[in-house]
Image (cartoon, rainbow, N blue to C red):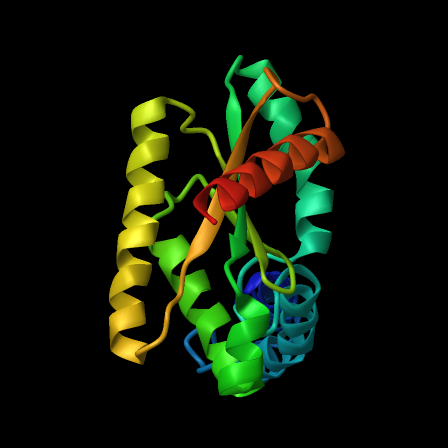
Amino acid sequence: MRYTGRIIITLVGIGLVSIVRMYGILYYNVPPNQFPLVGLFVVLVLWTLGSPYDKLKFLSERDVLTKLYNRRYMQKAFPKLFTLAARKQEKLILYFIDVDNFKLINDTHGHEIGDQVLQRIASVLTRHSSKRDLVVRWAGDEFLILSPNTDDYSKASMISSIQNELMLSSQELNFSISVSIGSAIYPDQAQSLDGILHVADQDMYALKLGAS
């Protein structure tokens, strides 16, 4: 969880305490070297008060189960990311990731295990994404990765790494965990979020049908 709210309100508090302290030194003969005990207490209180803001901001942007960015954040951030990519004349690749047979996992092993599977997949996706990538839980068992790395080698390497680690997880848990990953490139294949999602979704289903 980021500390934006706490940092802002604390900096404001430090500024106000500094002004009050200077006023006291100039007009009330407060010793300059006196330890600012009251000021320190005020700063600590303000830091604590900033915590609810940070928590609410985190919950508005993140999925509670996986801690990945959520659908709402993706929809809000998408226009800015695409505008930035267009300005830099970059391409973006969207990966649409669907968990294979997730209903069967829930029905066979229970929803608690199903949640653990989603958390593990989220961890794997994050590990094999770069700092510039945006990793999102889009819906129940659907994930997205938006990445500026669009070359074929990067794409193949990331997909292979994800699938290989999930194979190891399958061996550890004694049941199959796998995902189908479709992709689409902006702006070559679509110029909107709905458009690029549709192309990547269709690609994912084609791969899923081809593997079945």
